[in-house]
Length: 237
Ligand code: C5P
Image 1: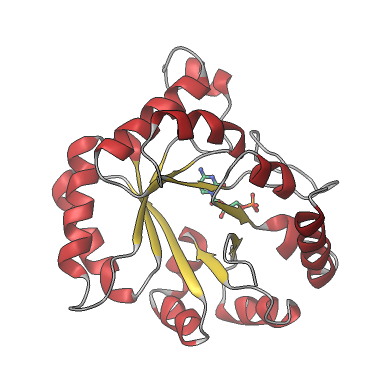
Image 2: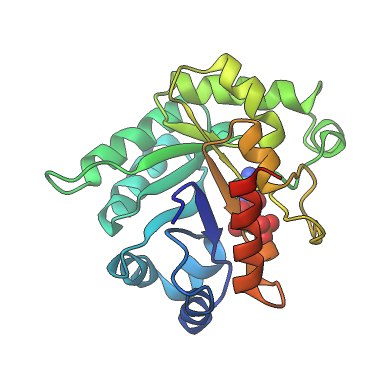
């Protein structure tokens, strides 16, 4: 089982989650609970997945004033997640407050979850960034700047597209992690994602964790899609 591959459980019910994991025949080691599932099932879903021995990335993308970010992280820390995240766009003070909240919230003796910053969503394009949210320049430059800000705030890594991993590694400290959605197996639909690549290419670019959802969960045969992906990663093609 490869801990570097995080399966996005974007479902609305616990039953769908249980069925999905059963169909994948316990091949998965790391899963992601996003807003869709967390809002539907609450924190109980995190406990359920942890009880099954899985590692859990709770992807709630906190973006609020520092005091609220700190409080959110303090509450979230109690659920036993292995990875949580905030938007870098919230700024240095917010990221530092989130870290503080996380440290305060974990129970004595347990290790803090990895705290990861979201740079630019992998569904965003440069045109959207320039014309709608009025951030000028190249998207890679914004992502690199956000990554160095997250590094400065003491975060453990960032979420970005795999295409931006090389530049992120250049501007951040050693061991700073990259977590990359925007992953599509060969031939599967992009959907709403724009900055995408394959699992093999993502690892070639130096990513630490890939996040993959619909290419597996919505495949006609999820177990086969997973097995094919693992084979391509092992063979590097
Ligand atoms: O189905 P797909 O592989 O596109 O799923 C990607 C997952 O990663 C989704 O759960 C999405 O919310 C999440 N994500 C993302 N881009 C980010 C941060 C998280 O796609 N920047």
